[in-house]
Length: 254
Image (cartoon, rainbow, N blue to C red; front, top):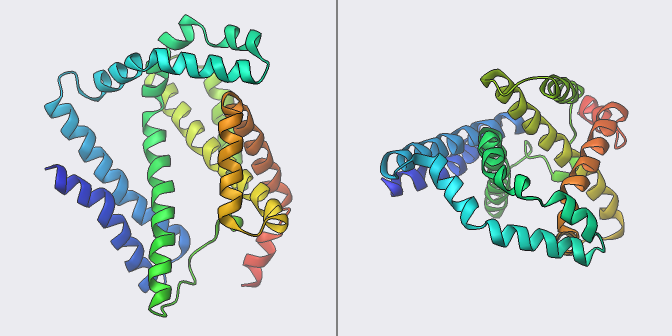
């Protein structure tokens, strides 16, 4: 059973991407089709875990987080100390925060699964593109990371769901809205990071070197990553309405 699940998660998304490239489908259609196969595999994996593991996925995630509570707490605390923000660290990393962490992760599980599937499939599509290029095949529908830009509709949905969840309860409807917000907010943040990366690309053309710099910065500023991602989301919103890179005009010309 596990081999079937891994086949669905790993092979079918790549096959879907290759099929869409061959049929000259749009980038969005190719990415969505690949991600659907990946999400289907993850859902099958979750169902299989719920069947064989006592307590299912909920108990598995809760137990894993509780088992790593000490490590997570120490890592966050030491990171704040390195940044000379020890007082802020003590105020944020409280017992209430650590006890509520499993529930917070579980509430974000749907949006996390979808986001992970989309990111994985995009990387998968880039790999398929490279393979097709070796055989001289066309990949016109592939979009580079520098071309990622959030739409105005996505930004409006993110802002609307954010305000609705601020005044809602812990109902199923509010949890759904919260996951929509997490999903759109993450997508906008990635698009904002795309704009920032396009600026760095001019000074540092080598992709590998830029990735290394980003990883080092993330490791050094680990506790501030959520704040930095909020900053990327704001950049993504401004870019959606101002179109700093003139991507809309480029698409109209093509």
